[in-house]
Image (tube, rainbow, N blue to C red; front, side, top):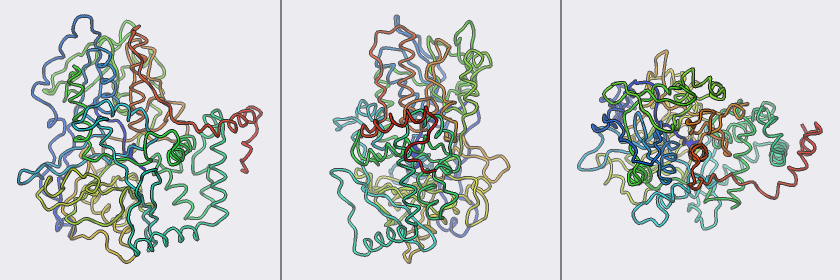
Length: 623
């Protein structure tokens, strides 16, 4: 799923974020647009978001970091996203005095947030987020950390807050039935289907089978076999430099093939464009998901989400645990420059919450900022000390941003993630209320009329939409919301049923990290690292040539090779291990758990290594 993971997905929308290196306030956002205003297209909803940095900065943060206790080495962690919090966690457990500097709010892109002004009658504000969480079973390092974060009533800490949706759906437009499928996993109870829902599900599958030519299906299966049996050297050198679109010969195939097997897969797995995504990245993650679905080397089911808003289920308990370990937090502090002198980092220039310029000093420094922010803080002298830092300028980021729609009636969509594979803006989404069993949504959130949150990730910001003929970046915030709603309806209301009704729309919330929409210079403070061909060779290692400076973030070279929370977590572990080595520490090293490699394929990969070194194609490669 797009997610950040990882987005995230999102998927994994789902990836590390946090501190930037500029002092600009977070852009004004729209906490909600009334249904009437939204549908009729009148003036934008009243009210704006305060800057997140000012919301998050406690008054006490202006004080400088306390001196480390005698005998304890000090570490400044720059950035409070998943990478920064993981580094702080591992270091604090090993006795280091850790201070985390974060400009906005802990959790970075993984955090959830409140919709300002939405609470009524003693309820909590409506929950919002940069993008929905997605924590698949192919992750191992992040779940290990989650098990070590206490949560009341949970034997396995916040890890026990993970729940597995039983199904997913490819939503089609143009009158096509949607592809709805269960997610296989031992112990999963398939979602109940009425006779009508069963008819539609079977119709959707058969329509796709009929429209996808048999020879194209056979060719795609062959390409998968080629990749699965390719040796690491062929993957790293040949497939890393081959776009997935080219590897699958998508340009020669039917629209159905392109939508499902080229575009649909890349959007779900790596949240990037098939035309430029590295085959190595797409194929490696695809291999891991297939093994996960078969129960091999998995931490859990292929699709998992949190059973509460992210901060409630994970980030807030993590912060409390880290404070109990002695970690200090400086929220509202902006990193400006990592200074270099006498062969090491000599200090970090920061702005405190009052805008005063300060210099932070420590024994060691872990840069845990997203790459687009981190590289702007590296001074010329620091870059000269390690050319690897300069290669990070070639790493690319793109827009992937979340918007939430709050509904007054529960929409009967799917019990899990949905992918609108025909939508121009590459939409993926999930309904959240049913996955939060400890919450009565209307009783706990908002004004008492909202019963659900449809959380949507927008992955394509440079393609014209269906309402205004403009890209998402060219639209205003209000236009973005209307356009996304229209594209959702085009995918979900096209087969005779009205699954999303305008009358049920209460309000919406667009990520406040996006600013300047509809102007010539739109800005996204939380871009996502993407994976065009060649990216693998530009990723830096966690340890640098500077003896007291280390890198942590989803752009650092780790086994998963994807911008995910798992990658952020694994890189932080690698950074801590490098720091311990430099320090000559006797503390136990962090476990950095590699992705699962199906043992059944190793013999074929060894054979392919022999062929690769002879300059031959993979034995299954028909061209």
